[in-house]
Image (cartoon, rainbow, N blue to C red; front, side):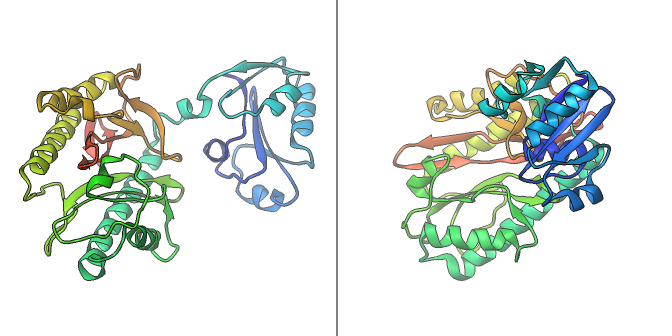
Length: 338
């Protein structure tokens, strides 16, 4: 792919180590151009790597002029990120060739430096889980999901030092049966089931982790959990076994769909197959959801340098839900739980 255009901020950052909310990147054979407006050119010239910074009031006009000057006849673009207006404007002077997930495919395999940043993000996220655990033990009982959510955001941001990968999911009992539950006025009590799905960004790279626990005086966010209710325990143990099976199945050269099947088979055998309602995992990097997709329909094959989640779940409507999620990376041919 000799010539292409990207506009998404994380795609821009991946190409040249800088991004802003009004810019585009052109790769035209052996030359590259970062086009932005006067608000950002000073910083762009200081930070952009391996590209010429071009200042312009109208970015697309500048891009079209550069494309014409370079004699480019065709240009790849991502139809999922380019607006119809941009497409119509540029297609008057160059043939635009669709390349779905153009940047995501380039970022599917991480460099050693990216894996280090992702490891750091995961470590920061795990420490935030511990801080939130201590908050609940001290002040959490009697607070609503809304209050817990508010405090989770504060704790995970660590006084502004870190960013949030996404709005934390803090769900009690039956609300945990909703994979992307929104916070409610439901009050946390001793003995409740609590699902926490949260992550942080470190140097723009994301972490993503989920734990399901029973609230008690000595609870923690480890994966060895005990529940007083037998059904909750059976469901939890089934999800944990499914995650372990998927992690064991994940190897270089294995199909992502086979990893999904490994998790799904365990949950099917336990009798909860129809309650596992999402894919087993997804890539993580500059975006919280990247490639590869770990699902039954995925055509991806696991390669060295990929980083993705393994997160099976069982969701019993109006009762409770369980999800256990970790990020794994393919490092030196081995699957490592980050």
